[in-house]
Image (cartoon, rainbow, N blue to C red; front, side, top):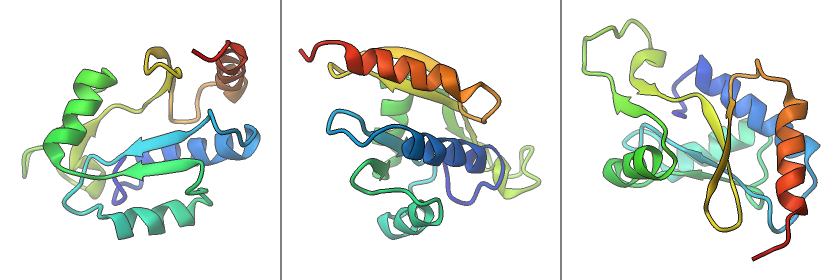
Amino acid sequence: IFTRCAGPCFAMTTELATLQKELPARPDLHFVSLTADPEYDTTEVLRGYQAKFGGDPARWSLLTGTKSNLYSLAIHGLLLSVDENPAGKDQVKLDDLFIHSTRLVLVDRRGRLRAYFDGDGSQPRGGIIKAVDQLLAEPAP
């Protein structure tokens, strides 16, 4: 996500906020969002963004850091696309600053990627909740 985006990032964050409300609070269930815009999205900016959506910092982390670390985690760790849109190229609004995936990733306790879901709210939330419930029912490593 990036906080200046009013399009898909707003939809993805809204979806995560709803999932946070619908899934039980447990120590082995945590939500994480990565910024695509670490130069703008400071810790303070992300805290305000999280609060706007009713995010519980104990259950949901919004991460910033160096662009190289964040992009490496997204691309090589989570197998998601992210890149800065070169200035002037197809940029007509703030939503166009970054090219990034809109998928939600389900990661298990061992850090393995288990499932991908559309993060724009178009996919039935019940499927996401069922997949999370099944994962949580697995024995801890």
